[in-house]
Image (cartoon, one colour):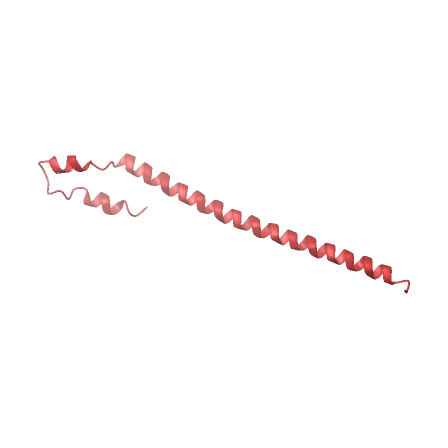
Length: 88
């Protein structure tokens, strides 16, 4: 056994620890990125839901029995709203 072998072993252990630390750091960065993407998706879904609710409160659709009993119009008054409600 030469006098440099313990230094080689110490150096290889140090490199292994650095690689392990780098791998765990990269894993954490990837995990954070995935969580950020999911959070953005949830925020977008929630915003769309709130926008739909707000739109339906501002422009309530008549109940089917009300539109059947209406005397005026040809029944197409709600077609504009129904076609616009799909584009949110």
